[in-house]
Image 1 (cartoon, chains in turn brown, purple, green, orange):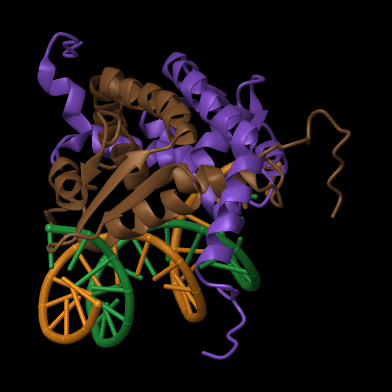
Image 2: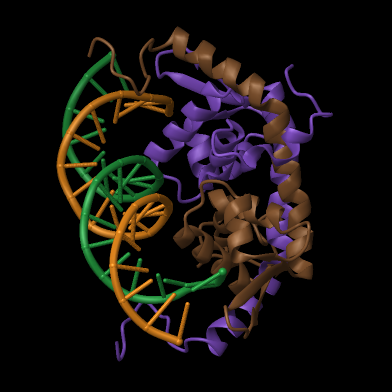
Length: 138
Length: 138
DNA sequence: CCGCATCCAAGCGGATACTG
DNA sequence: CAGTATCCGCTTGGATGCGG
């Protein structure tokens, strides 16, 4: 390993293949992480509640993502030992700090969705007219 | 621009399964997108140059990601018809606006890498002592 | 109600070989 | 140098059924 902590450029640089920040970016990059963290911003939420809020997420992915977030110390999981078990999820302090850049990303997506769509359309028109999922004249 | 900041629906927009912002978040969430956009911040870069900067990226993934970014209108691709073909990539205006939230994410990753690692360690210790890839006592 | 385990399909992503 | 095309493993991720 050539990791040189003294090098200001390489220190903590995700451009290094062996840097742990790569893993973090991977986790953040997860489709559901952004949405789940955002959904938890309001406060505590139960499992079913989250499942309802984040449309389209499967139970498996929700559990998996929540577990990963918990392991990373971004989400706190609280089990209420009642008769029908109640589990509540909430952002930790670290999770709240993550929410900010994630929200910025969401905002960017919302702000540029039209622009991007237009660019895609133009690109597809200029290159291959039929990359559509529906096969026409195959 | 069809973006209407006053629309209350937009707040939870990506939480709708059918919303195109989902696609954008997917693209942004791509492992390489963050790194490539960041690598292009300095200015124009050639293909090989990018491959060198973003350590660990395969030629396939680099091409693929660059193509997608170009299609989304975030990266401009310029081909110089010289004898050894030279291709240069650069961020568009939209790409530059994306760079900001992406950099914030990178910064977050760098700032919290230690905290996250510690949390993971504690979590693993508290739960399963041997989640290692090598199966022992399965 | 919460979530784990399993099965299984699909797509991601890497290695390689070849073209212009 | 830049890029395409192919093969292929492996992970992702959904559906289902069971257990606390």
